[in-house]
Every structure is written in structure tokens, then in C-alpha cells.
Image (cartoon, rainbow, N blue to C red; front, top):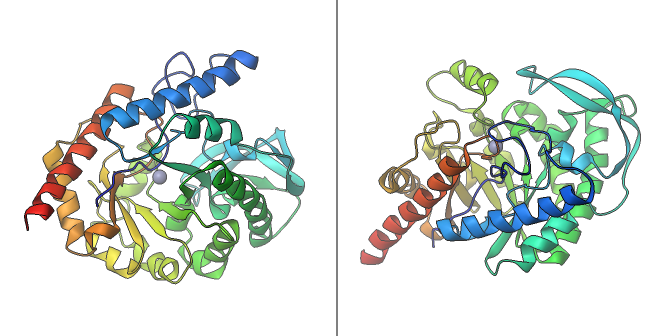
Length: 341
Ligand code: ZN
């Protein structure tokens, strides 16, 4: 009950990539880099276990970016052909690769770090992949023309990868779809259907993470424009509730999301973001417990998984792991209360 987990990414050690920077380039190269990514994965697992996290992740230590990391081993993408594009409805500009032909998976993308993570923990293990709609929003297209067609091509590649991750022993495959909070009508039109294609046939738990983005300036500025109540989830949750996806990871702590919206996800596991990744103030266990208690008014304890709001990749490492320890302690506080009643 109240098993803790994380949204996905964690800060990398400074011997691997420049700290406290989003999309930080690697410091090492060649075979040494490949080994260092795996060493960092083992370290991230160990630090999550020591912080008391129940369902751990590889911390996305082996990829620079949560979308482009997956694209690295696909055919049909020209990484040299960079296009500067406004992404997430022009919230920020990013230099993105370009689709120039049919998208196909050349081989395993994340198997090395998934195998390493699996070999070094007995806890439940979660692995994240970008969702099709978010990939389409983070890449330029000169081949498919229609966004939904491109999304379906990525869904097929994601499904192959996800099935392999499951075979490696991953317990939860999570698809990250921040774009679901930006293009709400398209979620119902084709976003959810393509995501279900990506998860098709999986027997492990499947999850979707929808958030308001990392704690970077462009996102903080965007949040200021959303008003006193953030109701984006209200449009997409009913669509997700009808889907085959098991779990929904959402932002909650320090956000203006009305918590009662989780009632729209009746039947799903809810990963409640009880840790703010946009602030360096480490929550107290009591802060975490308060968020969990508020969510418990709308979801049963066996369906609630205390989590972080979003990935922690650009954070200070000590702050991030301090927050994970607070997450675990806060969950334990509420578990004790529930056992007494
Ligand atoms: Zn996120």
C-alpha cells in the first residue's frame, strides 16, 4: 500500500554529464562512456533503494534527452539535419532531428541499461519511454505529412522496444506524454489510440505520465499563464479512463491542479506527484503526507502510489535524493495512520 516510485529521470553524476543542466552533453566518450552509463544506472538504483523508494527506475542515466534517447537507434531519422522548431505549442524552441524516411527500429535501444538495472535490484523496476504524441511534437517531419501517421510509425517502434523491456523483467513500462497537456482535443482524436498501440500486448503494468514539464524557465512562465486552476487534465482523464493503460502519473505538489480531478480516473492506479521538481526546497515528510492525504479523499490507498511531479534530471543531486527520502518517509507516515484506523 502506498508504494513509492518516481516519474523517471534523476540527476547524473558529474563524471558522466555536466550537472544541473537539462540535455547536458556527455563528458566521456566511446567505450568508457558506455560503461559509465551502466555504472551510473547501478548507482541511481542504489541511491533510490537507500532513499526508500519501492518501485525504482534506471533514472534515465543512459540518455541525454527523454525523447531523443529513444530515437537514437531508429532508421529514417537524420540527426545531422537539425531543425529549430517551436515545441509544446511553441512554448519553447528546440533544435530537433528530422524524419526523412520510414521509421523503423534497427535493434534494441535501451536493453543494456534495462538489463543492468534488472541485474542490480530485487525491487519492482520501472522503465520510461516517450509517448508517440510527444515524440511527434519533438521532431521535424519531411516524410509522413500527417502527425497521426508519424505517431503510428513511432508507436510500432515503441511497441517492439516495450515488449523487449518486458521480456528483460521490467515491471512497469511508462510512456511520457507531456504533449497530452497541450493538445487536448488531439488526445481524443488520435493521441490515446496511438499510445495504446505502443502498449499493445504488454502484460506488465503500463503507465502514462502527464505533467506540466521540468522546472525550467519556459515551463514556469507558461504555468503563470494557466490561471488559478489548471483544468487540462479534465479533458484528457476521461479519455485515459476508457483506455487499457493501468496507471496515470500526474503533477500535484505546488501545482494548481484540482485534486478531485483524479476521480475522473476511476479504476486506474494514480501516481500522485507529491514532490515539486521545480523547487530546490526539500519537502518535509509531513508535506508529502499532506499531499497523499488530500489524494486519499478521492482514491483508495491500494490505488495510490506517491511519486514525483516530473523527472529530476536537471536538479542538484543532493536535493533530488533528499526529496526522494522525504517522499518515502511521508508515505510511511500515512501508512502508519491507515494501519491504526
Ligand atoms: Zn514530466
